[in-house]
Structure formats: C-alpha cells, structure tokens
Image (tube, rainbow, N blue to C red; front, side, top):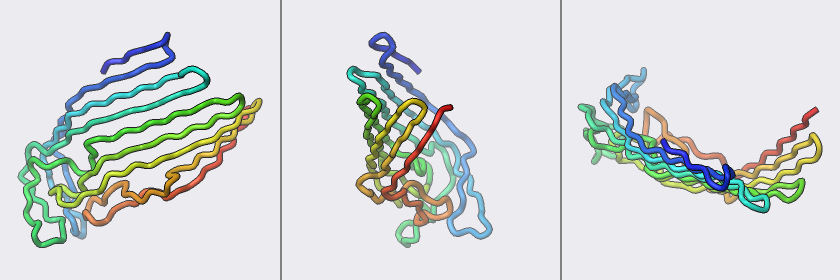
Length: 198
C-alpha cells in the first residue's frame, strides 16, 4: 500500500495492489433442508484499490474511491445445481467468479460549505455480480445517488440526508441457499440527524 500527500497535507491518495488466497471455502447447497454445506475449494482474489480525499479551496471537499477485484475459484471439485433452469446442471465451479463479488466498484462524494451551511452529493456504483457459484444467475450493476444538507450553529448540528434520490431499484445481495432469493436495496429515504454539544 502506498500513500501520497499533496498541497501540504490538504489532499491525499492511496493505492493498494494485492493478492489474497482463501482455502476451504464453503457454500450452502441450494434447497437443502436442513442446510448442507458444500466445500467449494480455493479462491484467489487479485485486487487494486485507489482512494483520494481532499480539502479544496473555497470550502469544497471531495472523497472518492475505486476498486477492482478479480476473484475466482482456482481449485474445486464442486459442481453447482442451484439454477432452476434444467439446461444448467452439474456446472463445474472451478474457474468461475466468486459469488457476490463485483469486479468494479466506485464512489464519489463532494461537499461545499457556505458559512454555517453545508451541502453535498455523491454516487455509489457496484458492478454486476453472480448470485450462484455456477455463474448462471447475474445480479445487475447499479448506481445510486445521495445528497445531504447541513446546518451548524454554536453547539447545534443538523443534517438532512436523502438516500437513493432517484429511487433506483437494485439488488444488494443474494441468499446463500438459492440464486433467486435476493435482497433488494433500500428505496428513496430521508434521515434527519440532530446533535448538540454541551
């Protein structure tokens, strides 16, 4: 991991390049009741992570990041039968992408201060992912956009966050025992936070 500082410490960037290897990976057999655990084997992830944060001029601040994860099952005797479509049976897991792991993801958040007020907006991107170890069911990529507005006076700090402004429908994750039992993302929502320092 390498860190770089700019503008006398007002901005910084990091870059991380790595390889991770996990052995004895296990997964639940779809439809099994009680749940049966299937040994998947060995998984290797080659990755890159980049981040940048900065206090820019005139009250601007920025935070951004990007990650690349190439996660594959490198050694396995397991086969996947989780897809209900009859054409996809006994699929070898070896060489397939790891489940629920996006190859690309990125985020960006920018804020601006106006005296006692602060406003900001940001986005979060997640690439498509596979819901099952046979890589036959794909969870599509998605992008969400958020915004905030804050006010600070003396010890009082108010902040309004609006999440998923465009009410994007997306899937966050999949269920371990079936590729078609998925968790939806939160719809548009707002949160008001008040803090007071005595």
